[in-house]
View 1 (tube, rainbow, N blue to C red):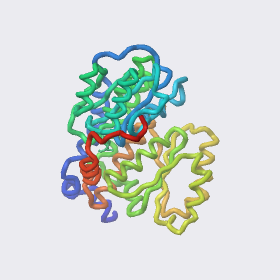
View 2: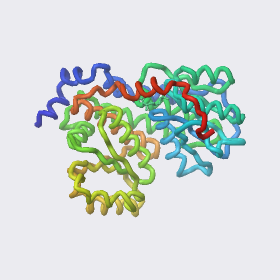
View 3: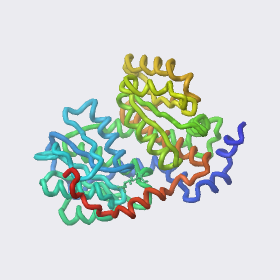
View 4: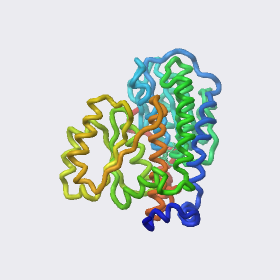
Length: 361
Ligand code: F6R
């Protein structure tokens, strides 16, 4: 067993490397999801079905919208647009529904989106643990899902995801049925026991993935639906392990990024492919050929397979695997997986209520 693997199995080393107990938040994720699945906006939003949904959020608080959009894309006749930025795009008009998510409630971009939505008299649902978003929502009578505070937004994915699913269902848009939600909850519960630090590296897929990636730069590619989760892996590696990562989606990356794998730096990258059973044959074939063509150039290749049958369980299981993998990467690289000092400093300097002058509104 390598010394790195021993480090990931050593409770004292883990405790030293994770002074804010991020591991407990991650281990508690199944319970977070179960609690979140019972949360509803108060007051209840209007039941009218919107012609378009705009999910406004940044960073970790946009991830719930990404998963909802990926689930909805396959079955809804209504588009779910994830909006990351100030204001709102013009498509957010008329009977559009805006789901404004900010875990802290202090994110300037989301607050400006809410201001525009109020101005345009749109149907809004706010998802937050407090801050200015909670105040705005109370002032305007906006249906709000109030979340427990105290987490890092990126580790509150369950809270940001399941209430959005419920809010959309109440508006006649079912991105995941009750049984799919139940399956997703079971799947993350099973996965938690397999990925916690107590489970040794020899038998822990997230530790094995982190050890395989090692010092290399992870390039995470998903298929048409898991691509959103590949992006989530990238941001989790960036925020938890404080390391660069790339993400992309098949088939699109076959039409451009694949050429970059001839660059001399390819050997310093680790290819991670997010796969699922029953991929459309065309996508499965593309994964195979992509691996054939660039696998040897990469410093290493790993495949991570989604759990479950339903779309929600699959996406959530891959996202959860990415959370743990980036957590173990942080420990291997000797960085605190919880704090995000640069991100905090930037917010401090820009100011929470950063003016939206001159930007999209
Ligand atoms: C920090 C994190 C960030 C935040 C983002 C927006 O853990 O995940 O990506 O999510 O800075 O802040 P919130 O989520 O509070 O609106």
